[in-house]
Image (cartoon, rainbow, N blue to C red; front, side):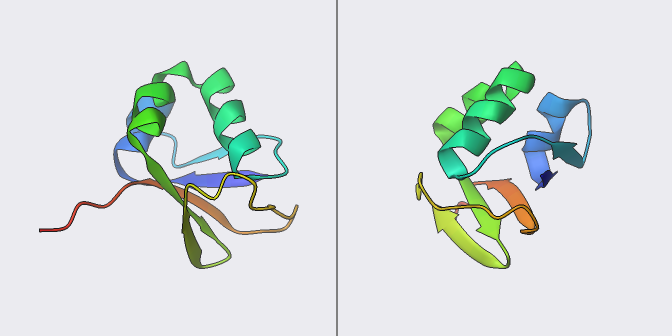
Length: 80
């Protein structure tokens, strides 16, 4: 699947805005990203949100991701 990366997450992938990984759910997605791009680990440990087909999830580890789903990963947003 293709994953679109937002914000500071792109820094750990040499500026790539999209990457491709194999995963069936949010947890597998994060594990696959860390395995392929170890520099993402600190940000993922701080927290990320998943936008799946336009709906945002946080810590929904076993949320299934379909092969044709639109997947966007972003750092947690901080309000103020």
